[in-house]
Length: 561
Image (cartoon, rainbow, N blue to C red; front, side, top):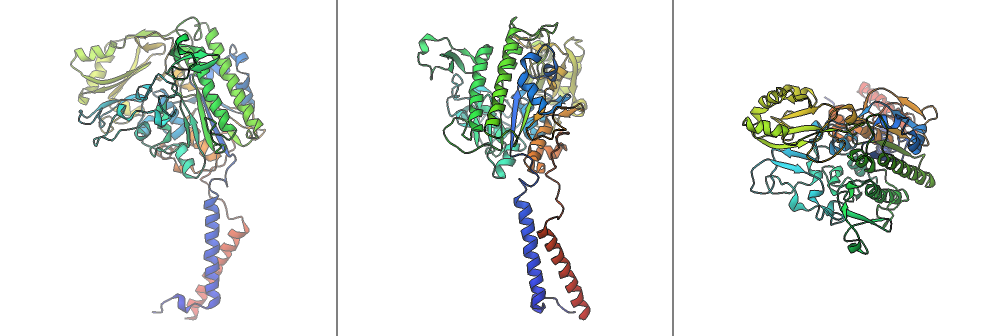
């Protein structure tokens, strides 16, 4: 048997193989290095979330006069009239929808107030603990800074749940899959994000390093307006002359709070960091969240919400006008920096609000828990808004609990999901997943579980909770696509895949989207970054010809032997 070795090859044959390998390698490296730009239509993706923004709000003729900048976005983009956020429709899963491309079953995050059967409240405590990621984990929740650096550094690790080794679980540790920020960061791109609590460290993803510039002023700080500026006890010039109260107790205070975040975003559009202290350049993926509309929708006074006859209140109108003007300022800043053509702007919402019109019927927070406790069913944790999520001490009692609640014939209850019905509704198996509730109560629209006073709430499964606004726009969008409407049902999870495709990044690197088979949004003319380009370059063709020549010479040599 003749052995084929490099030493037996003629010089010309060696040269052909060497050239072919080099050319093939160059072709591969060229394709690999350009993976973030070859299919890229955009250099930036800006994600704007207006909490509480329904698709019905955008289409409401009584609200049209206050949405001129949002309407201009529509004229420069594609509007999705049947876009839906997560269920439950809480802020955390709603935001993770468009940051991970996945639902709570996959992310493991069902609410900002949830429960884990595997974590502990502190080392030495029994296994199983509530997981509350809001202002309660701030070093100082009374301060806008959260008592730290407006970000992860504002989180007090002693207030976090821990694992069995005593390691504190930060919000980013709690997430089961990566985020679009991590994919972009790993590709060497600059990332930034602005939200309402330091607890939105969650968006960093499991690595904790997805966001280069994270700015999260605490929305539930105790604040006041001083000379038109939002201040707290630590920043006010004359605190003794001011009355401080929680930001969300006032629409005007929340508007001023939103202004802090808009100014930070304008800094980023100008190439600075959020606080204007450095110049890292414009982020590839960045975004922020508006809160004023949500606060106005919940306002139980006559100054909030939309009346049952469809008449918007003065407070809601003011919040819409203020938010719309801010969106206009953001778009104008993009244009002034010559970034509007290279930026895909996505406007959506983490959640809606229910009821959109009229006032909610409030149910006492112990309505269902008392019934269960009297029947000998111990509730370890309950999260209740216009939905009820329940984790039991004895999981074998879940079906019994569900039957008991169904038999109440309470007009607020639409459905109780447990066992197979829970999984068929798209949730995990509570017997094998430590995060999934043992059962969920779906409420009928218009009911809210609360001992407080509020006009509306979110978290539930109704159309008012989940049917959100969604617009994707850019100056460079093809003229035939601008102003178009997509009526098919889409999910906000598709925003995550669209964002990566727009930047030419591979959506297959997004773990949750791959697991759930999430596709990009239709109608935007964005190429699929996963598509392998045909060898249409001269380098690729030369490499291919060289390979064919190598094969031919090798065959001839075999025949001669």
